[in-house]
Image (cartoon, rainbow, N blue to C red):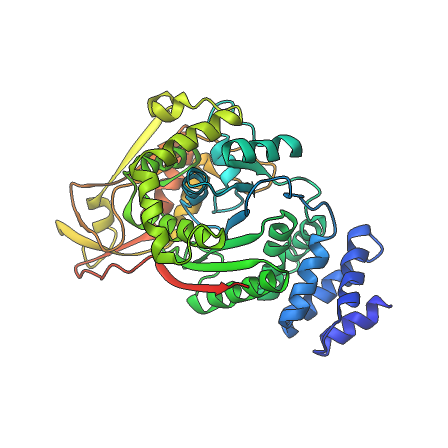
Length: 449
């Protein structure tokens, strides 16, 4: 087999078979295929695309490039959940305890944030003592004992994906549906779950900006999982503004606690209920989605889910007393309240008026504002400030008056605060006319045996 011939074959729009794809992935991973040839191949895929079978074969080759987590020692049917990333997305911190409290084992590997999107592992590290790296034996024991464990991804989980993604990132080949789907699903399949529920974000704060592209990605990932023997559901959700009221690591942990105590923001809870209900169906706990919703509500209303979160945090070395008393979390040096008047006066239509309506948000800019405060990283090795972030009091469709508090920015550096404030203010548009509030759930795609 010859790399040159395979590049030409894909460049000409032909279909690669399983062995040819394995040859390319293995060759690049072990260093026998150089960067320049893999770059040419990726660009060929970018322009010519891959069919469902090719995409699945690429995914499986990347999943097989390193370790696969063996979850057979965990009792029950294991269901994983993955989000394609967004701003203020703390759903894993809420959905995990809900499922575990209902008897569904959740064995989850999560990532760190990069760019404007946050990472579950960073958020959990905001809890003093919490260990995001534990042995595989301890991981499986904890899931059996507690029902929930969330750890960082191991270094040798789908190493081909890490190497290929780094190359895509510098060769303008990131935004291709097949390559994105294979990247995400290779890690999910290597993580060993029996079924997977995907939260595919769409909008200004998501990787996929349009609903059309988000549906294509959801369908591709569901097809990969189904062809690999997994039950799959993808829920397409809105990311045109932050999910919930908080953006920032410790702030999002605090908000997750509020949600599990029954005080969650409506859009955030709508997404969490939908994800949890679909996970219950895939886990075989219920036959229909409608019969799952009452179980999710009961887990929150009875306090079972919150108690499970404390048990989970304690099991991984965290100090759960911080969840009972959130004032114990570190406070920032600076707090900057943003008033409605500041937003009103930035828009010509509402300048000088006393009231208006929030009509649009460049959500990526909100994520960047949090990053500038110190709550995110621009490179994988950058150290983040877990205490900083943004708390919102208003959402799209809400009215805003001049003296109302729209949001509060939390910072430990005045210069960072000024820069973040400028990005935050410019992210929103206000108008004299109201807009209808839309459902945060756009569509659901299911592929089950």
